Amino acid sequence: MLDVTNLECVRGDRPLFSRLSFRLKPGELLHIVGKNGSGKTTLLRTLCGLTHAVTGEIRWQGLAIHELGDEYRRQLSYVGHSNGIQGELTPEENLRTASCLSKKPNASFIKDTLQRLGLAAYRSFPAKVLSQGQKRRLALARLVIQKKSLWILDEPLSALDVDSVDLMSELLTDHLDQNGLIVLTSHQKVDVAKKKINQLQLD
Image 1 (cartoon, rainbow, N blue to C red):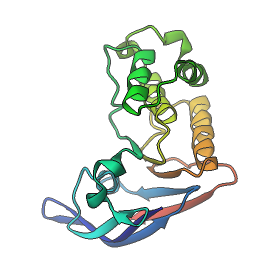
Image 2 (cartoon, rainbow, N blue to C red):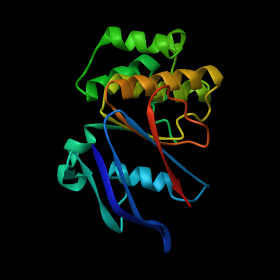
Image 3 (cartoon, rainbow, N blue to C red):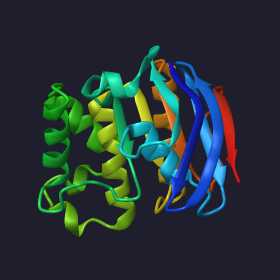
């Protein structure tokens, strides 16, 4: 469970939001919406522990994330605006590295994931030659490989075509089916069949 209480964040001297509170339970998705500059990315980075709030508290499984430290970060996967992939490595090598870092190496699962994400034909090419949409799908493939409980995603649907958006909806649904938690921002509608979606508006 992820609990956020009375969170306040600023950028420079400008307040972004204050007294922000919400609770996310297993199997739930929180869709954060708001205009550009409203603090969506700052909120996600704060939830990851990458940015510090002025006031407020973030708790994971009842404990403050600053007390949990690496134990909390081992349970979350973050995909930001940058895909975070290594361009000199192939898609297969990128996923193999991710699985080893998560201590969950599984060669056959990596192969199946590349196939599912439509990247099998490019498994031996340097990732830097992939299109923007393919790079985004590779970044999302890491979510599947790492098998973390909490997904924090900043505009995960950007650069994706219609078929890839449908695939992303399947990945989100599968994660929620396994009692995962998802926090994401998106200017597009998030379609997750038969799942509870909460929406948070930032002004």
